[in-house]
Image (cartoon, rainbow, N blue to C red; front, side, top):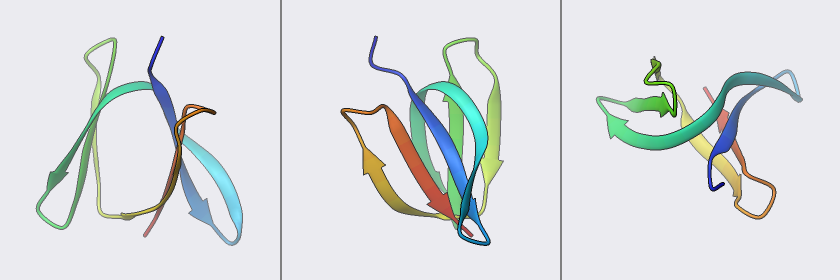
Amino acid sequence: MCEANAYLLKNGKEELLMEKIDKLVPHEGGFMLENIFGQRKFIKAKIKEMELVDHKIILEE
């Protein structure tokens, strides 16, 4: 599968934000995340790093 987990970087630590993301859409100063179950979450953040081989998206506010 090609889904990724999103983590929010807080105080130097990665906190799991959402699992099995298949869509990441830029939206009004942040991103709308959607997973394979149809759950959506909006976050005001920027992409710090994407590790595609490890299926990991790291965001920071």
